[in-house]
Amino acid sequence: MCGICGILEFDSKKAVDEGVLRAMNQTMVHRGPDDCGFYLKENAGLGNQRLSIIDLATGHQPIHNEGKNLWIVLNGEIYNFLELRKDLEGNGHKFYTRSDTEVILHLYEEEGEGCLEKLDGMFAFAIWDEKRRCLFLARDPLGKKPLHWAIFDNAFIFASEIKALLTYPGFEREINSESLAKYFLYGFIPAPATIFKGIKKLLPGHFMVVGDDGRVKEGKYWDINYSSKIEDWSRDEIKKEAVTLLKKATEERLISDVPLGVFLSGGVDSGIVAALMARIVSPSQVRAFSIGFEEKDFDESFYAKKVAKHLGVEHHLKIFSQREILEQVSKIARFLDEPMADPSILPTFLLSSFTRGGVKVALSGDGGDEDFAGYPKYLAHRFLEKFHANWLPIHLLANLFPGKAGTFLRYSRYPLHLRNQLWISQFSPREVESLMGKNFELFEDVKGYHETFNGKDFLDEAFSLDIKLTLSDLYLVKTDRASMAASLEVRCPFLDRELVEFCARIPSRLKLEGGGTKSLLKEIAVEFLPEDVVFRPKMGLGIPLEKWLKKEMRSLVFESLSPEKIKKEGILNPEKVEKVLTGSNLRQVWTLLVFEQWLEKWV
Image (cartoon, rainbow, N blue to C red; front, top):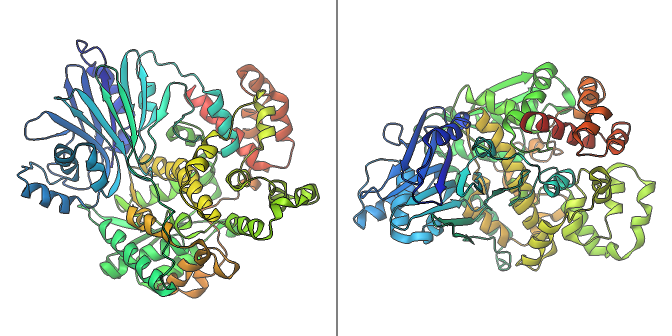
């Protein structure tokens, strides 16, 4: 795993400033503290901070081809690189490293942009092609690894993290108001936009070609196909194939020249990954890492210990105190380049830091909910569609019910693609308008995905939206930033491209049978895990946030969100902020607090 960056001057006579490139690279040393490297020639420059995982001795980046007219920097891992290398060597390519990075370069020589079709892994990379005088950049299909870019001062600049771009001389840190409005609605900022004007994210499954004459081409090379279903397969056949693909994905992610482990939460997804690891190698070789909390209502460590004992794996557990968790709140903005309102980033960072003390690579259960329908809102969608409740005036009853029930009723009349987001939004569109003092087009991202959805099943559209928005722009960003802040690589078998494509072909009714979520995966899980673990209520990696906001964090909240401070900044409506502070929706308070912490750090 690495941090990558680069500069391409559109004036071919202007050389890249080495000091600027090095400064950009240095901001990401946490992503790769083991090594750094640079390529500088005329108007092009590449930088890399390396976390050495594969080919520790000769994998120094940037890497070149035989003729030294192609240079690459990679953030990520290519799991099928040995197979690809064998084919490339058969075609006469000569390698000087044992790394997966060099394989991409020779594959690009062979296939051009078509190389992306053959890569199995998580990646963001950039290739400088001296002959074509262009940069070729690409991001993995599901967006596990980030890539940000901007055109500024007649140059194209890119980096794994926004903070690297902000070091570019003269770059103005101007907030994109529309992105900020979306942050308050979504709790994150959907790609391709970022919180800053002028900086964009390359979308998952997309590539860019940037010429040194200023021409920019962007294209899509992959999308999930929901149009083809395996209706003629039996339930047992589907489960068998899912296990086969998941085992293969897990085995591929065990390739490493350094120690690796697994996150073990005590839930189904991470438990299955740990169980497969124990069958592929041996239980004694599996190192599982878990964290717990003194707050018993949020502590899953009992189940993690039970799973570890059942599998016979080596288990490492740390119980964190309230003080240790609260100490991290002020540090969130340090590794978040743009605001993100998911409070589970706190325990994710603590788990990553604890795990990094024992290993350099960890497998996780991320993606299981998206593959196999793990969120309760899918049941609500099915209820509304089945009983046509969206045509009944049940939304008028919303004010009679508090909490989630009221939210469900309030948005029941909306089409699926809108309510799928509104049910989990931090603020309502009207509240965002009041908070920002202006009306914005908040749903252009959702509507865009809705218009291009290629399936026919209404639940498949909900799965698709969650993969393209919430997973890509929230959960994977959270995992990447939290783990990379601890210099830990995280690999996700459930997000294997072949497995995701297969799960998209499974009829949605099979994933939600019996009135519960993730029914198909739970049937698979009982082959590996204790039944009381499989069928217990879903918790997730949570913290007692609402309690802390009322008590332990109260002074921080009122200091950060004081009327005087908000008025001086001139970004938010002070009266609306004060109304949130005196209200009962503490998730809104947290969302505002995260923004103010981020604002203080980066703007």
